[in-house]
Length: 467
Figure 1 (cartoon, rainbow, N blue to C red):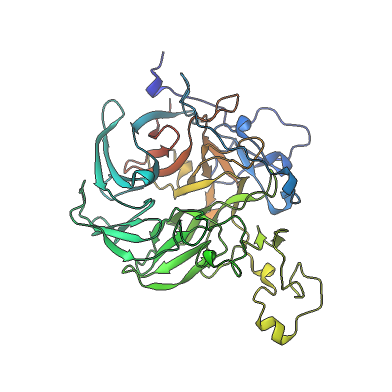
Figure 2: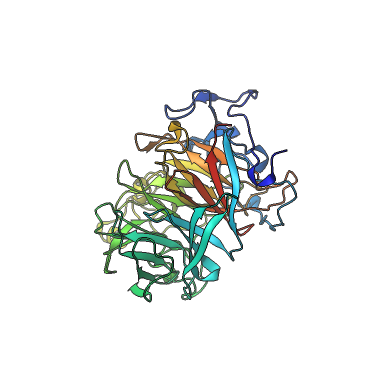
């Protein structure tokens, strides 16, 4: 019998049975040649149908009408990992338990020397994990910095083999620590770079607290993601939403430059596409419009782009919960006579629907998509090169659970095909009990994949063996 910590889980990479009326189409060139993609209404799914190798594609045409009465509160109660339960990966991959015992392991980033930096968010710490021992466990775990404030984002600056700083996105500030390659403990105190981000407990509510941090490829701008304070508050009438649901641009020294992109409800995970040099976001969309609205998404982010929140979603779909004082306009969804010139000056949302950018990849609604990365390692088979991976923390506003997995997003020359594929599943028992919740993904210098799981308070390690 294979020991539990090295067991292999194999699943078919194709769907052997074609459902009646289900459209099945070949996938893109970067995919395994025998994969199929589930499309149309059948692409909406739940945990019971999530299996490694299964691909889906949701399009704008598949979106249902809003059904607010359909909204449910179905958040998980996390249970201890049952005997024999283990993450399931595609055939040929091995999953091992790499590290455990954290308070809340969240985002991870790999330092140039291969050390893995981990945000233990509610532990208010940044940890460093080094090496893989013969038992598959981390050889060394060190506390790099403590006394932080819900740390999440981690970035090394400048780029290259010898960064001088580790930047950390706290919930209300961005700080940095002096760093030289191989440091396991910060050699100096935190230096505040951005003294005030829209914070978790400002004004009323609190809302999304994660703040990710990345640098543009030329190193001149620091991009900080700040999620909304609410589900669907009008930003014009709720001051607590100022500079939220945005990606904000600063200099590396912390000078505010501009709102880089807006209307992104909660860009939890930021990354730079190494092929195109463009920012990408893994995004949580709004809730309480029904089981199959609104899809979370993964997307490239255009500078000065607008992604709809709170007035619109996934293009020009208007959120029915927000009365719009600009409905006299002439935009795609606006029927009444045009505003006068004076009225137009006071109504910035005229024709706004036509400006909403449709995301690149639509995921399951309420998936809670968190950290993402682009895979450029050599440890996995070559067909994975350039594809993205993202952690799906799992739904709460859906009658049947979905998420609780890591997905693969096929790419073609740096551009998404619109599909996504289940990659690491099995965190929900057959009867719907949740024992694991993926949050962060990073690759080691050897190209293997590491996944944080704040359900088991662990880090999993995925390698390709071909067996």
